Length: 161
Length: 260
Picture 1 (cartoon, rainbow over the protein chains, first blue to last red):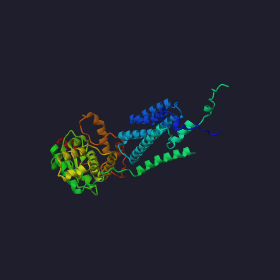
Picture 2 (picture 1 turned 90 degrees about the vertical axis):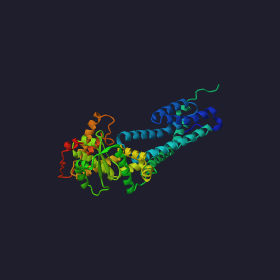
Picture 3 (picture 1 turned 60 degrees about the vertical axis):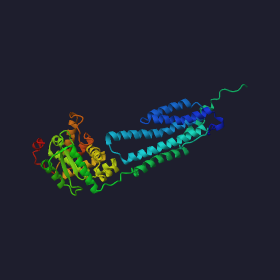
Picture 4 (picture 1 turned 120 degrees about the vertical axis):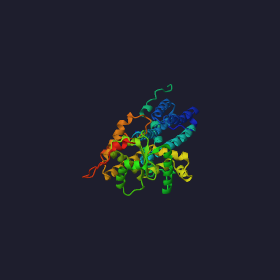
């Protein structure tokens, strides 16, 4: 079976509405990250809701909202572990280990990187451009643009004979 | 496949950054300040002046009679000594506390003397406080929390408010877990040398734990986490040398303490 991909939409083929929605998927995550900082599960739920309401708005929007959703996962997990760890230290160990300090700095760097890449992603999306994050970009591309056998057999309506 | 390579790169970045900063944690500026011996002594005197304003001190003769036998035994077993230790007894039966300031000064409240069951328990607490001195925790903590302002206080001859802040800080128990654990370790070692069973400290912790609730909330109680199970276990499980026997103090403790 040969792997076929849907064609990638070009900037002039996209409506402003699609570009806005694609940009919104990145900006939306920021709002939810800020809200969900103490309990990262909140922003995860918000991200999933946003993804499901937008995935049907065309491949371009689908790609960007998926990339923004899955690229948020590691940051969310890193933050959740950090919060959990901090609480543990506060209640049980009462000792700041080098391991934890290193982890905090690492978490800070990852959050910053996530922030910066999301901004770039939002700007590119607004211009109708594709933008691939490391790993997550490729993963989203595979998930969204790869033709499945289902999508091929969907041609049921034909012009008059 | 490319996608796996990218995932690997991402995980590597994650691991390497973590490792790099664990290996070489960013040191906060201002913690490397040094307090010279002379300055430490000046500051210790200023703190003592401040405490004298706030509390009644017992005469040296009382200190020698009550604390003398205990401290002499402890200090005889401590070699080498970082400081010339000075012990003070403060009159406040509501404070179950002992604390160390600077330059080998250790303050004990009469409330603590009345609280402990026997002089061996008190010896354990004093050994713990000596441990903070010997480990350099006090200077370390002062410099970390107040930094330059401590130096300024000494250099300007002691701003009253500042000195009072410093003594309050030292009175409150704000060492981190690691420092407390190391001071405990030090205390066990010193107690064994001085022929006092480290388990005495465990008895004291247990007593604190059980009676903590029966005391009013505003009571200042010694040490950060007295009810920590680990500390009790640590004191009980400290290995004793072979043929080692405890030598109890030859003191009529209840009578001594009664008159305070």
